[in-house]
Image 1 (cartoon, rainbow, N blue to C red):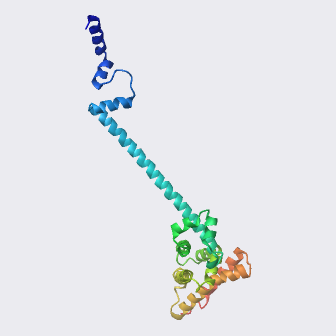
Image 2: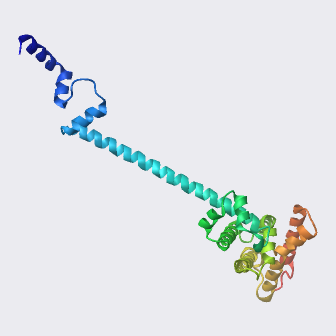
Image 3: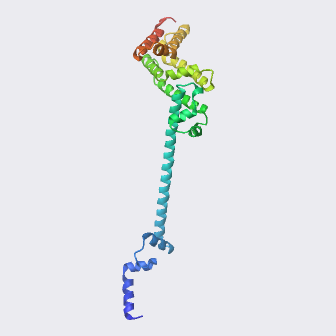
Length: 262
């Protein structure tokens, strides 16, 4: 090798970049970072291996986050569809007899398909059971907020409930004995109302006992029955405020009768 070539080689290897290229096996030409990292891993460079492992971990974490997001989004969309179906079914079961409600009509109103309804609820009866359970929870929650002995709040809550659900409950009452689920729902509702009246109005008639107390409870059960609301609002056509005032007077009259009689 000539002296000139030896000097050129020494100058090249004395450059820091050239030394790094020699150490990593690179040609010294600017190469993509990933290509250099791959070459480094082939030579067993520990820093390069850790970097690659870190990159792979980040990629897996990002994939996991995207997968979780998609799963959550699908679950949320499914729940929205479920609520739409329940809303549509509740509207139809509350307006039409059971036999006249079709899954096709529910699907059309809910903006979905019959196949989707069957996949989520299995059958028309299961859908009805969900609707009944939903109504029951709503009514029980409303009545549970009434303090025992507070007659005004009790009357307001009961009247508001009848305004919201009264017509639907009347339709269910008309179907009692024709469908098992509806019959069970009506009977359970009747028992619940009786217990609620005893618990809620009990403190107001606490001074009575024996037959007098039983008669007071019976009068309260009669005056708070849904059919009294029906007579006032549907048969007589009274304005809500007027009907509520009449119902309140009936309740107070029921508690005032036989006052002092034990």
